[in-house]
Amino acid sequence: MTETIPRPREDGAESDYAREPDPLRLLAPLRIEARAIRRGLRDLPEPPTVIRTGYGTTRAAQQAGRLSQDPFGQMMIMGVGGGLSADLSPGDLVVGTEVGPGMGPGMGPGMGTVTCAAAPILAGELRRAGLSARTGRITTVDHLVRRAERAKLAAEGWLLADMESAPLAAAAAGRPVAVIRAVSDTPDHPLAGIVSGGLAALRSLRAAAPVAQRWTAACGTRQVLLAGPRSFCAGVERAIEIVERVLERQGEPVYVRKQIVHNTRVVGDLESRGAVFVDELDQVPDGATVVFSAHGVSPAVREDAARRGLAVIDATCPLVSKVHAEARRFAADGYTVALIGHAGHEEVEGTLGEAPDSTILVQTAADVAALTPKDGERIAYLMQTTLSVDEAAEVSGALRERFPAMRAPGSDDICYATTNRQAAVRAVAAGSDLVLVAGSKNSSNSVRLVETCERAGTPAHLIDGAEDIQLDWLAGVSTIGLTAGASAPPAVVEEIIAALSGLGPLTVTEKVTTTESIRFGLPKEVRH
Ligand code: SF4
Image 1 (cartoon, protein in one colour):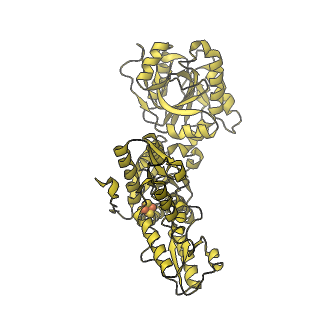
Image 2 (cartoon, protein in one colour):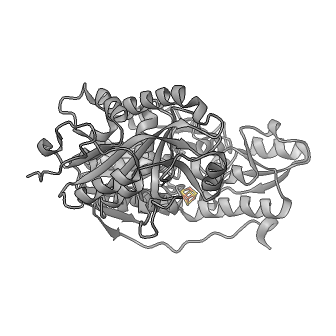
Image 3 (cartoon, rainbow, N blue to C red):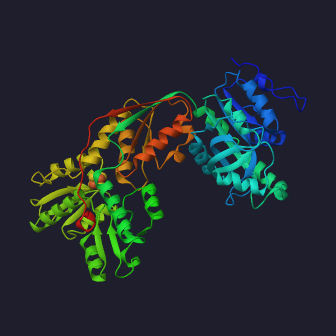
């Protein structure tokens, strides 16, 4: 049922709001903005209705009064606006993280700030559509702002100014609300450039318009089942702390061979603080300090560092070092080592390097048939620490069938963190329509979590953060499982939950399958 709410009659046209059958209120203040958005929507089978709300704060406040009586589901405000930051260009899109009153007598103290929590999801969706979009705070003013006022608003942390969003957004009253404004003018292209800037902005609005329909399909009441344990393991925490401590003691730059852990957020954060990630030691200046990553290195890399006179601080996870020691021990005893793992992974390359003449990489059960050990009676197996428990069992089963006398490692090579996170995500996948796994594409244990869900019959997606969530994934989904790989920071999980809460009422339930208390000591170089 749709309640009739007339829109402003500034153009004398009959409102199409009354015939509006869907829960979305798609608002555009100006006729020219509404037209651009309608054009962007016209190829959709059932395009949402665009409601013109009128120019300026007074009309926006009047419209908000009408909207407050309307039982709509969610609100999206689209239009153009003035960029406040010099790094914005005409045509860029700003997706509001919050919308609040700025300067002018029309912006009364009673008008609060409205949070648009799903902004990172929307901005990611727009970027994937090829548009230049970023998130930021949007303020509403009651007059066109000049250079000095722009600078003042920018200093207060606002990214864009418009003349309608804050009063309109306030009418959402807790329901999902999104604001997308296209930049028409900037501090470097002020009002003199408004015609060309305005055209660029309208083009962007038109291109952005289809996102409104996907956003409204993704809105709804849902629950999140949070897997526990998730996120950082003891080896990752130790590796990050080592780099932080070296930075603290020696200042920047601190060279790190390979990504310290496989996560773009962690690497980006440490880079911003002075860490320099290199692929090989020849990129490290003579005499510098270099940190080896959590995945470990082969003896050849250690020898190279010693030859170069580099000061080495080793962040290899102790559970990876354990596998290296086992490889050396089996090789010294004359065994051929079948290393179950993935070709090209840094950890596997490091382990292979411990006994290259005695170790053979086995990736699948099919590889087992092709294995030609020197002595079928003296064969042992080891594993990469971050494998899928189920898949690795298949391969080790095939090995045992072919080599019944095969030796096994003293204790499981797949580490506690990998095993625990797979068990935890399996438990939430069973009750979820979809699972989101926070982690980077090159993170082996995160990719295994996605595979674990898929094997359990639940679709899953690997995401670096909320900006990677695709709105289409969420349509019709009422329960989302959520976990994070061992290299993904806990803050990313919080960020994802916050963004999902911007799409409608969200309940979060944690399902803990086990608790972890393992901690590893730091190397002596950074201990005190
Ligand atoms: S995932 Fe396992 S092996 Fe890798 S760093 Fe963490 S604890 Fe160590």
